[in-house]
Length: 238
Ligand code: 1GP
Image (cartoon, rainbow, N blue to C red):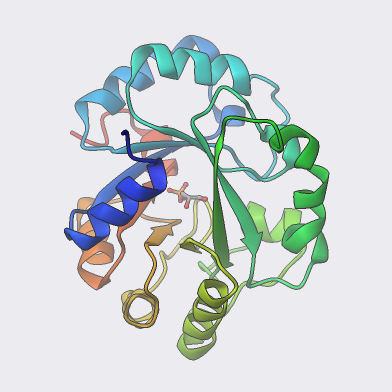
């Protein structure tokens, strides 16, 4: 029997194997580039491909994923900013609930509105507690969700939010500094959150060097997400 995407993430955590996701934002690429991106991803140590963004106006998600699936065997997870980004072509969906914010739309409303698309779908739906941390500038998540991030020094609030997410039944916690953040989530915060939760921890936002990736892993991140660094340089993973 094949394992689910979640089981493979969870098994990797138990075996202390670190995972790497490349985030592709459909608004920031052209379909004609996707084959080359997939080739670069296949040559890298990436284990997952995330597709999505805060503001996707470019309705190419299905086509984009079909090309990725043709060119790569990595699992493709939707990382949605809005229900319109749900594609049945993907393998799974990070069903994100913005736990750091106090905007009901991002806690439950968009989720209700996506049920028609999800209830008969083959997508593996993974309940994910999404926690936005201040990365030194206003990011698209903050703007679109109209929520404030948790201060990068508010370590106790961050780990309590993550733990509450776990108790609410989230299967993953995603600590996010926001795409293009000036500063990634501080290592002290990653350590505190990782030591408190018993579910896999994803960390992303503003990570642009091998050292920053290693620091996140060493602090307890199970999966690191790279978006902007790869968008700016397709040879980043070399
Ligand atoms: C954004 O965590 C991801 O949601 C990736 O961020 O684009 O800064 O790598 P970057």
